[in-house]
Length: 131
Image 1 (cartoon, rainbow, N blue to C red):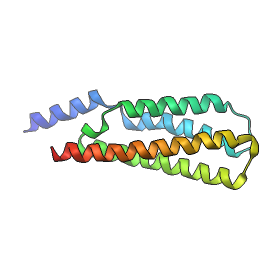
Image 2: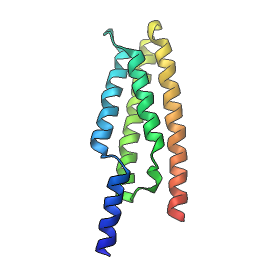
Image 3: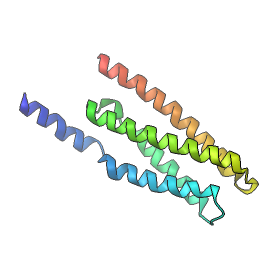
């Protein structure tokens, strides 16, 4: 029993990234994206490409197969990330900077895609848990 638990933990670590550092890179990118709501100059093209690359990586991992503790921690991190994106969108809509409208649209699309993907992940997780 103990050997099996240890085996499961090792395979989880091999199969999935260490979440704190994984989400730190997402947080850093999200912070860069938030600059659309300021007068500061930024490389928005690069920041949005980085966000897309990270999201594609997130989508490529079979989170639904993770053990409960790891899955719950992942969903907590991801939910927090999406809430931050919502706040950035809300603030951008209040500011209504016409120069940044294109980036606001990209961010709204990103959030919709993230929400859709996360809903599908939850369904997959239920199916895995039921099996």
